[in-house]
Length: 492
Ligand SMILES: Nc1ncnc2c1ncn2[C@@H]1O[C@H](COP(=O)(O)OP(=O)(O)OP(=O)(O)O)[C@@H](O)[C@H]1O
Ligand SMILES: [Mg+2]
Picture (spheres, protein in one colour):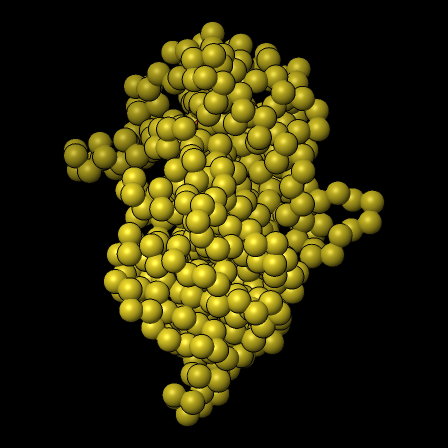
């Protein structure tokens, strides 16, 4: 393994301070056991409970109290240069005394050439220490190791239950592939749960696997797993978009690259409010048959002042580990206001990062961005080549309105055959899909209230009472449609 060589080199070079962000403490210990087998050095571990314990062949407990000052003093007093794995020590560095002591060790004032390794899930250091530290990424288990973990868990279950785990070979390989990106303990926990559910590993485990994996990866809280994707049968219109997705499905899902065809990367859906953009994003994930993950731009800016970019980077990286998947960026204009200036250039940098990521990402993450307010969108985002295609989701045509009535009447146990659909389509001129749905709902409420029926007259009455957005905001909607006709492909 490469990383072991790297660590060995770092230790040989007497690098004073390493930082490893991981929850997999055992893996860290294993790595350093390997390191000292190559380069003989005392290896110590520290935890708040046990204090310093020696881990190499001279195993022994240190008789130093586990508190920070005593520990660092003891390290400083050691004559022989050792490796000290300090688990969750970083929070103690808030104290001036500990900070100073550690700097003394690291800068080798009156102490031997120790290597201090700070280990924790997320380690933030005071600036003066960060400058002296070298952050080392700990690689995650590869396919072979993950397959070993799965075999180990299956064997453990068999010992315990006295029968074999039913394994579907093809599905088991898919499960192992989907564990990539997780640490060994996380992968083990998930596999164990999948086995204990039903004593089997099969295709039925995949949705739960993706969900558990998502929960582990979404540390920043910026991503939302959309459990309910939709199918193109749930959405009327958008025939071009549907055909576009269907034509690309095979290439998108094929693990082997297709010669001459780049895998599809993403679409931008622009459109009038309530005409089904969000629904279309869900249908695209359903059409590809992959998980749908939504990026919450609002949270990106609000929750982590000053850490916006780091969190975006992490969130986008997590989506790559979930691939193949659809990443849905809803109302992208809200996150990328082109005005700029007021937020210290953060949204500029966020846009820059997003565009670079979109251009360079190798993993199969299909981006679906949606937007209403096109005039607020930065021009860079609309430039050719960012998205595979920009679709415009317009107000529905009369035929599509009929189809929307059919869909939503059926969904509410009303028989579309008993309605005059063309007349409803005429009466709903200028209505969005969402507004049509709302009229049906309000007619239903009225009927319950007056003990009447939800019939043609009731629907026409409800339509007559509604002033659609395209009328209330005629100018905005018209501007958008004119703008889009020149620049986008109609989704229908
Ligand atoms: N073309 C359509 N076919 C079927 N249902 C539709 C259609 N358009 C809208 N609807 C109904 O309206 C609801 C709201 O639509 P959706 O949220 O997808 O619109 P949107 O374009 O994302 O709107 P917004 O701009 O407000 O986010 C949908 O969940 C669906 O029930
Ligand atoms: Mg929407």
